[in-house]
Length: 369
Image 1 (cartoon, one colour):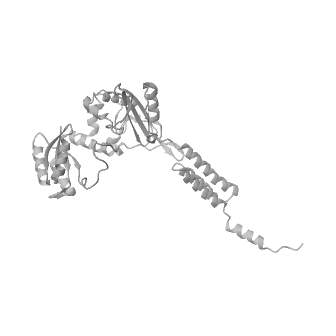
Image 2: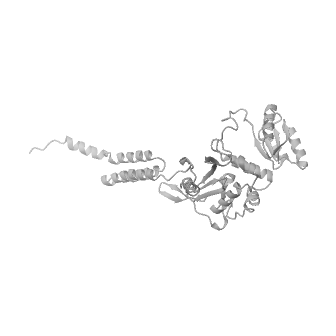
């Protein structure tokens, strides 16, 4: 049970926090404090007892302490308790009423990882290894970079096509995607998850409850009498997709060491063939390499370079314009065409000396025959 201290000087907001907290399974309200002094006294008493504070819901605008000063004082007393700062929420309009829809945010996973570390008083890596990875024998899964160098090199797109990308630093995504795994490990994990071996069946049902097509960390779609649950993830150079039928514990896992790969399409097609599903997939989640755009940019660039070679002048302008057009095609082909067109016009524009020569030839008097 996570023990929560609510620190809020507004009685109505404090009561709202307390009421909402009472609805959450696994949380208990330790106390409500309306001043920083009161909060520090409660935290001190709790630290001396067998039930220390695990989470502090904190308003920084307190009457006797404000800003980072109040936060630092409470942290000094509460120790490793997680702190969730709520200041300013009452002044900002909500994007939508609570419990009506969702907005995807990786920041939520970062907050969750911090809460797990605070509550367990352990690193997230060690916590997951002891509670999940080791019991399930997921030996090819962990945080950071796998030891032994047995990791696939990531690939991404460049103006020159596909190329290896620099090593991805897992610390950039941490709890929101800083892990490595194998397809076999991921399938074993998903099977255990859907079999309610990691937590109670009631929690699994909540996870798979769909609202606007999304549950807790799953996109959920109806599939006849069953449901399809799936999710994808992309980091620089890599892509992963899981498609599952929870009721049957059937799982498809696709891992790709290329962040442009159509992994979502492949996973859903495999599920359709093997499991007889029919699943809509938004292609917007699965971008492809812009081959046609690069082709247009390459042709436009060749026109600029060809004009320079045919006219045998302004070679630097033609070559630079051609290369720039091809590079710009990876962003947008109209930009590539515009760059190449400017380069061609500059190459074909008459020089000042040519203009003077033609003028002199025109004005020269005719020689008598």
